[in-house]
Image (cartoon, rainbow, N blue to C red):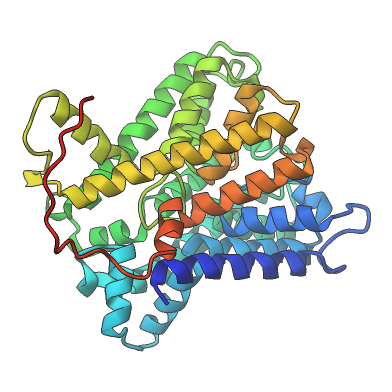
Length: 437
């Protein structure tokens, strides 16, 4: 079975199993009440590391067992079931077959099949090391407010949720991380966990091996530079636009405001944690957050969106076309037509899914155009931000968002590849067509 089809199928199976387990009496509190559609929504959101919730409060609706189930689903979804199993086999010494290496390389690191063994090994080691360190730091941060046992559990849950860019939280106050908007330890720890999980395991393996920016592969440089630029952009926009907004960061002071602006800039692209009410943000900040959500994380990471590498390639391609360059060059290398075609396909498919989903929601939902656009982009980019309408969606609306979260995590491009058994080798040469534009 082709690897893209295995990826899509593995996500479907894990989501359905997760929904069934969440429906068990041991997983839900009697007072909370949980329908199957809400269990399916929660399982999809967890496996697709989105963070959107159709129930008002995860901590209230689910028992500790239910929260553990959600955490396991987040971990599986963040790494990807196929990546997780392959990494485990490599770690215990099982060799990948030539077919497996070819399939994985075409999906994760085209042209780098020989590096997959290192990628899988670093995936598990780096993931659990980062989550363990994050759990220790967060537990220390929570210790001042909660009992020791609860602090450790909160530290572990939020460390995994942050590294996997899931955005789920179990804070009793039910306001995401707003209760800790003055805590540098918690906010910076979670922000760097989000960044670590969002740059991609291939980039992490490259950094560990090369240990020098100049020696990194070109795609690793693209990911790091684009991610840094987007974080700076989001921080600057959020800081200057919201600094005088008393409903968000206007009453915090300069350094706490800067900290929260940085935190939101990081989380806006894929994680979904927040320290302010998003509906209270000014229009400019909301518009920029939609852009950041749409771009998302990086290839081979725990996050969604069209990905930083896709955005960078399309941006360079556009400027090359405007300057009438014959070739699109990145790092003194020509970008091939296959890469450009794939980037364009990812962009167009994402736009089509978002436009169609929003149009369907407009038929069934009473919410505004902006609220629904925000919800759809957040779901497709697996971010988890909402203007407080997720738990108010109709059955049809929840199904649309479930579908969007699945498409966003697995990838519309991957799903379409899953329906194709073989690749066109291009043996037949056709006359080139010039279209008027």
